[in-house]
Structures are given as structure tokens and as C-alpha cells.
Amino acid sequence: MVTEEKLAGWTGPSSATEQEKQERTERMIREAIDEHDGFDGYRSDFSIYAKGSYANNTNVKSDSDVDIVVECSDALYWEEHDPAKSGRPSGSTPYTGPWTPEKLREEIAAALEKKFPGSVTAGSTAFEVDASSARVNADVVPSFAYKLYFSDGTYRQGTKVFKKDGTSIVNYPKLQLELGKAKNVRTNGLYKKTVRILKRLENELVSKGLTEEIPSYLLECLVYNCREEYFSLSTWRATMQGCLADIYNYTMRAEPDSDRWLEANGAKYLFHHAQKWTRAQVHKFAGDAWDYMGFE
Image 1: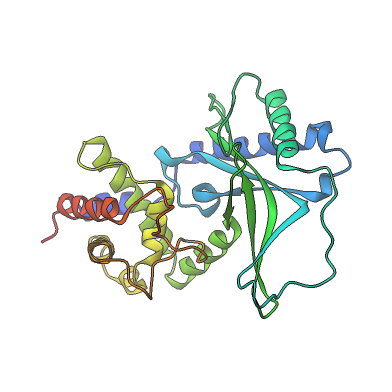
Image 2: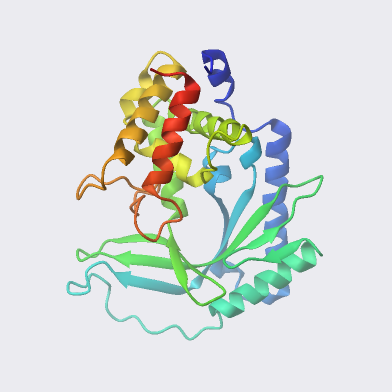
């Protein structure tokens, strides 16, 4: 059984030393982009910012990698939520500037190689920068500005990320940050603490061979969907019992037609055929965690 004292100890963020390394890593990646002459004349069209667990302050020591977005707004990609009822402003013209997905990857690769010689690997989506004694591992994600237009003229803003094979995905990192902060405020700071507990619980289970590894982002999304009444309970064990019961029961049945769980960005369904995880995988993890916690 995992004690209340141990759970309380799991609520904190990564250590001050680890946070210092994370901040240094982010700063060095910003410097790499800023110093690269391939971006001369276009620097105002780029924004560089952290995303994921590090940006959302839900990371733990074994989840201390830094994800950095390099977003080009010179080119805007867009889609219609309902093509039959366009809400996109008229008068837009096709993009004719230099920033193709291939060009963006090429310049980011050159900038990182110059700053971190021999430490950069080009993945299918992001560039991986290896850790050193002074920094943590980092993923640098080449991205473009993206908008999903609704029929009433409003839009949802995210990023468009092109993979090396030409396929693309849409992410909403700033929405995740915004919604995570709001949920943390509503729960008096207990939402993010609960996320850290679940991540550390998963780490312990995996290290003991008691469950399969679950992506850190998925764990955050699962807690995001748990009922907020659990975050006001008097003990961390009670909070975890409620959250694990929610996760277990939701994944025990078929995906409902309505009231489906969303990713922590509030923009995508958490479970669908294209996800890297399945309901069965999450259901088993919730059961394994329940048993390890010693709940009846």
C-alpha cells in the first residue's frame, strides 16, 4: 500500500537542480535559433516557446525532458470545421514566401547542429538534442501557425507540424497551457499536484515490472478528465482512489457517443483510432495502479 506520506512527497515538481537544467536547455535552444543567420530578415515571424510537461509544470524527474516549439507565422495553414458553412475571412491570398516545411526543417537543423555539434538527431517529427551534464534532453518541433475556422467566424489556434514523410499533425500547445492553468486555479493548485502523483506512481509501477509504460502526456490528460470534486477530498489517497476509479470505469465500457473525454488541450478526443494508445491499455494501467495502492 502506498502511504499518504509518500503521495504527499510525490506532489512536488522536479528538483531545483533539474529545473535549472531545463531552463538552461530552453535558453540555449532560443540562442541557437536567434544566432542562426538563416533566419535573418524573418525573426519577427518566429516564436519560440516551451510546451508539454515542462511548460505546464507537471513534469517529474524521470519526465524532465524539454519540448520546444519553433513556430513560423509567416505562413498560415488553415482548415474549415464545416466546409459547407465557411467562417474564414475572405480576401486571403496563397502564401508565396520561402518557408516550406522542408526549408524550416533545414534551417532549424543547421542552427541546432552549430549550437550542439554531434548532439542532434533528426526524428520523424522533432529534432532531439541529447542531454549533457549541464542540460536535459530536448525535442525541438518545427511548426507553422494554424487556425481551424468555425462557421460563426471564430477560430481555434494551434500549430501545424509536418513530418519528414510529408504527413502532418495539428497540435494545440497553448490551449493545453491555458486550460491546465485554469483547472489548477479551480482546484486550488491540486490538479497539477495530482498529475505529478500519477506520473510518479506510473514510474514506480513500471520500474517494478507491474504495468506497461504509459505516455506522460496521456497521464496528464487522464487526470484532466477526472471529476474535480476529487481534488477537494481530505487526503491524497482519497483523491487517487476517485481518479483511478474514474479512469478505470470510463475505459471499461465502449466509447460513448457523447460526453467523450478530451485531451488536456480541450480540442481533440482522447481516444480514437489514430491515437498511440488504447482504452484497453489505459484500463489495465488503472487496474494495476488500483491494486498497487491497496484500494478495496
